[in-house]
Image (tube, rainbow, N blue to C red; front, top):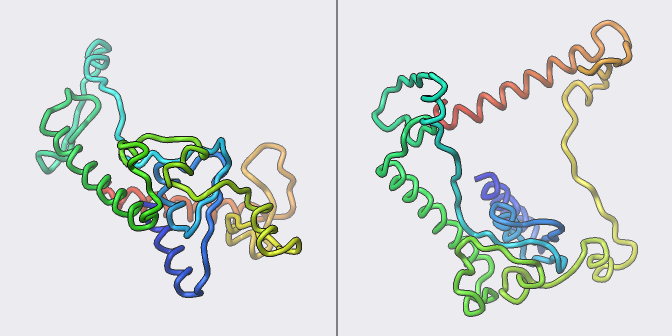
Length: 224
């Protein structure tokens, strides 16, 4: 979902500013990473990059027998007969797996539609009939399959295209409010230097509060 949101924003900005987008894969662009790469008009890789994994997966463990041997009683109280669906501390039910697979199939179809829309005729399913079934490949093989467009490292490639004076901007996480206001001091770790009453305490409190709110918002989306 996060990859879909980011990819959508990239496409909106590309259309708004009429700019081409080039994605450069270093280590891995698989699954959500490949979804994100497909937001680009052109995807460049290294021969040893990993790309693909166009699929959906859910994995876990079943602990019902283990907790029984330990004398642990599982207690779950819910409103809704399926709210505890796929609880790892209870025996797996066939109807739960059927529901999970239906959700996965829907998401997989959405993923495939996105890849086909972005890659179009460049895809080569004739090279591998399981192209869209969750397998992953090296960057070199990905070129042959049409998953990506060719080899290229970001600085070298863009300087070859736009000149040696091409400048690059590194995007990073925005500093917290306290740091942007210049209120910097004590950290949470031992040995931090004291820089005056309130220094660092406000920063830690403010950043902690924001993190707590963000975490609460994340879980609330799942009804938890």
